[in-house]
Amino acid sequence: MCNLYRMTRAAGEVAAWFAADQSAAAANFAAEVYPGYTGLVVASGAVRAMTWGFPLVLKGRQGQPLKPKPVNNARADKLSSFFWRPSFAARRCLIPLTGWAEAQGAKGRMTRTWLSLPDAPLFAAAGVWQACDAWGDCYAMVMTDSAGSDAAGVHERMPVLLAPHDHARWLSAPPDDALTLCRPWTGTLRIDRTDVPWANPAARQPGLI
Image (cartoon, rainbow, N blue to C red; front, side):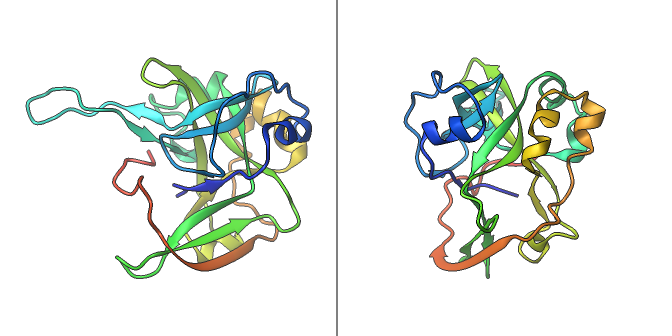
């Protein structure tokens, strides 16, 4: 699953790439995006800043509500569940990114492996979004099985990557049709294995349901 991705392009470049309005994108966001932090999405024809992760409210031992945790990944086979169904039916989005990372290596010594599309300065992952009281508008990335993809040698799951000609279909097609886009990417992926430690603040968070 994806708990870290890169988006190294400015909001204006994202708007031009996706032919979207930029006026709602005036917010600070880091080049590396972690769950619970701000990223950019394309939704309703505009580039918008949202929090990465739907809030999951947990309870303590005495039943008291705890600080919400961001559920940042939605399994494609769970999009019809109570948690995801309303957003999948009515609020789909595109998540611009330039690469995503997975952890590889022995426990305690994991390093970052980055995956991206070769020669693509920017591409889109499938997403869903909602408005929430805790964080304002928030989004989640849709994940699928990586079998048959170059990503399979890195992790068993991967983001649903969308070719440009499928952007409009993901955003506006009926749910049953949009669901057929949730498949492994069969094109070439660039895989960059690094020695950078996997220091991920989301490691103990419920990132995928």
